Image (cartoon, rainbow, N blue to C red):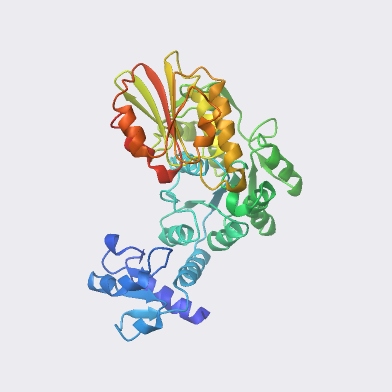
Length: 431
C-alpha cells in the first residue's frame, strides 16, 4: 500500500467522525474498516455500514469495488488501519506511556491514568484494546486536546510488541513483570522474556525513558542495558513509599508520612500502585495528587472487584487467569479475614505444554491451605482436582451453577477466578 494512498485515506479520516470496525456501534460519518477474523469477514458488512451512515467503507475484496462509490479498496484492511495510525501518531507531539507485562497491565494502565488526571488531559487505552487491532484504534482516538497518552500493549508471540511500538511510538515505558503467562504463543519462557522486552528495545533505540520494576528478578537485569533507568523500588527510586497492609485492602504511606487506602488488595497490586506514582511523578505530578487519585480508584470489569453481598465478601477476578495471578490471588484471599474461605477456580488458558503441570500446582497449593470449599471448573482444572481430595470438579459452568444452588454460602471470603472464556461472573447470582 502506497504512502500516497494512506495519506489520502488520512485526509478523509480528518473530515470524518472517526474509525469504526463494528456496524452495531457505528457512528454517522465514521469510516468503516472491514476487518476479518476467524469467524467473520467485515467485507460482508461494508454495504450495511454505508446504509447506516458511514462516510466510507475500507474493503480488501476486489469484487466489492463496483458496489458503491463509497468503498475504498486496499490490499489489506488491517495493514491500512495500522499504517493510518502511524501517520496520526507522527502528528502528535505528546508523551506516550507504553505498558506491557505478563500480569497487571490493565490495572497499572488504569492507575497511571488516574494518577495523571489531576494535572493532565489523559487518553488511556479503553478496556482491553491492547493488540494489533486495539492499539491502532487507540492511537487514532488521541486528539489535539490530549496532553498525555497511556497505551497498553499485549502480545501472544515474539515480534508483536515490536509491531505495536512502531504504531504507538512510546516515549517512556514500563514492563509490569514477566512470568509464564500466555506462554503458548511464545513457546517457552525465554520467548516471553524476548517478546515483552521488545518495549525496552524500542525505547533504547529511540532514546526513551525506561521504568524498571526491580522487584522482578528478570526485569532487574535489564537495568544494565540503560545508562539512566528509573528504578521503581529501593534507594534509587524516585518515590519513597511504605506498604502498611495489603489485605483485605492496601494501605500505604508516602515519604511525607501521609497514609492512603486503596480499593485493591495484594502486594502485587501495591507494586502496580508504586509504578503508577513513579510514572506520574516523572511527568510532573505531585505525589499527593497522584495518590489521592489512586485512592479513589474503583476496580471494575471483573478485575479484582470486591463485592460485599449479605455476609459474604466476593472477589470477582474473572477477566483472566494465569499461574502467577492465580497463586497471588489465592494467597491474598486467605489473609482477608477470619471468615470461611471459598475458592471457585476455572481453567487457565494459553499455557501450551505446561498446562497440565501448572493446573496440578494449583491443586497442590489449595490442598495445603485451610479452605472451607474448593470448586474447580473446566477440563484443564480437572488436573488440579485430582491432586486435591477435598475439592469438587465440574466440567461446565452450568453444572457448577446447579450444584451451587443447593449450597448455602455465608460468612465467607469467596474468590472467583478463571480465564475469560468461562465467563465465571455469571455464577454471581447463585452465590
